[in-house]
Length: 206
Image 1 (cartoon, rainbow, N blue to C red):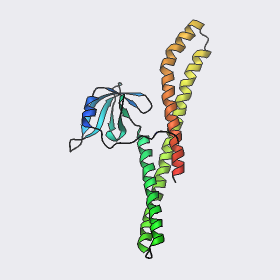
Image 2: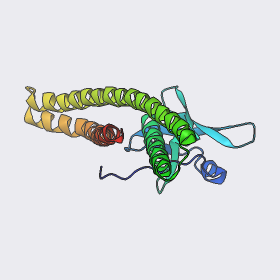
Image 3: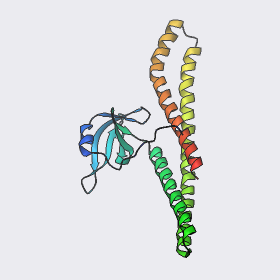
Image 4: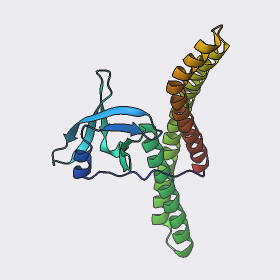
């Protein structure tokens, strides 16, 4: 697909997350999501989630599986991306197991046990195919949302340019608006490119 894969981590060092307590976080594509205001622990005292103040009286709880560290601080990985990475790894693992079983069956005289294991693995692969189809639907829906966002943001810029304003006002209005809209257009475009690549990967996976 030609894009860097995100390596998911089941946990992040406690000292690292404590360091970023109160700091602002971004998503994978550069959007500012708010600031970390709390840490949630499990029964073993391990960090299992962070609480992010989104700045509009809304607190978002993000599981540690969706977090990674970068030079800029804590980055939140979209839930859909975690799900896609997980199912792609599961599909790859299942296909490798089936391939190994078929090779072993060619060398063994007693094939009944291998037949049973192969049927089980192929059933698992069929279940993964169904899960993959659900994930594809989720990604396609997100692509449509992003297309709508990109269209709406682009229309605002066009409307300012096409409006019957004085040239001085139009230039000033466009400068102010573009400073907000252009970064958001870039964030949406980055996510759309990523989604498109993952949809290709999922289509090839089975």
